[in-house]
Image (cartoon, rainbow, N blue to C red; front, side):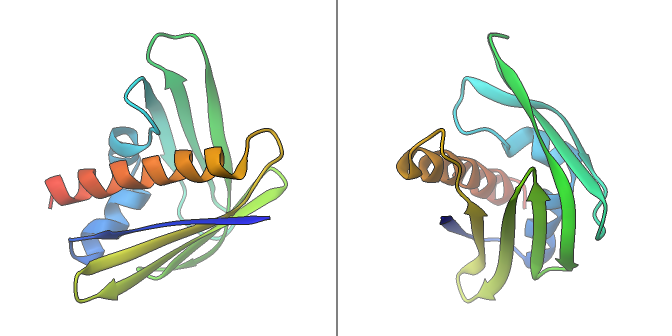
Length: 135
């Protein structure tokens, strides 16, 4: 099952793309709630290149690595990647109100569709706030 979340960021495409693909930026926005954070991030932004984000609860109680491999990249337009046996697509499209970012990903069976959509949307909302505050 495919799940889609999206946002519109009121910033130039260059800023949006950079914030989505730069480890220092990713560490600032990549969390679904205030009690989690990303402590490390790596990006090798090329087809076949790997990425990883270490996501941890701030109280140290748990953490995991969100990691995968880029399968398609069109600068300022598209990032596709695989993570485990799942895939995701991130589309960037310019509009009069900013840059629309749409993320479509394969759901998993551990959490409900609503939980997955909510978590990914919360991260995308943090991304929007980060970019708009730093443009």
